[in-house]
Image (cartoon, rainbow over all chains, first blue to last red; front, top):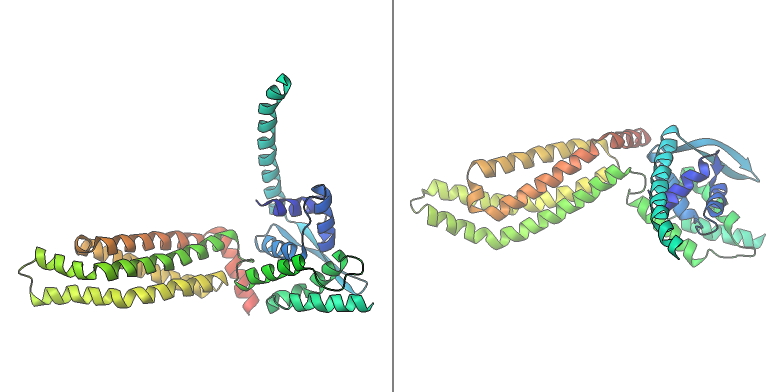
Length: 105
Length: 215
């Protein structure tokens, strides 16, 4: 799973978000490191919808502008959980191996 | 206010690169997000965000953004199939003469009918290979767009490829034209993998959705 995809799914993990909300959430989660651009975001959202990992939750009109809220599907939740577990296992392994070495220093 | 309208016009010009079906559903929303992320006083779309929008549009126009990964891989395999077929054509062009002479060396008493059969085979390849290249490209395009009929055409092509390969192995053509037979086996394997991908579970939903959207 690409990092942008992982971050978008993470942004939706605790509730639905609209496009701009996802961009801000992703910036927060990544410590301002990943700034999604609109073209990348909507290509990713289109693909994630096609893969059945996210869905449209509801639509609102705010200041004459359409806001479409996206939410994680159950399948999207499972995929995100699996990917998070995989990343955590890798990170744990790296830290376990680094700790003795760091301890020596 | 004028700045915003000018900026919005610029964004809409870029979003116009996207396919109509995508625009119908997403244009208002995407323009809203673009305006919300614009800097204060920004009057024109930036270079990086313009490039990002155009890149997204190209991917969608190629039919490669909506398709699930399985279909994406299948489409890439089909392009690989076309390349393999071009390679086969080149190999065939280089070896056609030796195929005929090998046959004559091994069958000095060959009848006119047998020679005619070998010639017919060679002519068949000259005609068949360019058609096969065209079919691979056509199928890559049609499957990328999720046309359900394309999957049926793929089954037909694969069946034809299987018969050709079995015939080559069964009639001994493989002995005189090993390069062509290997090429045939390679395209068969590519075809098998592509077929498995377009008929696997994640692909089904895509073809069904595209069919529903087309109605």
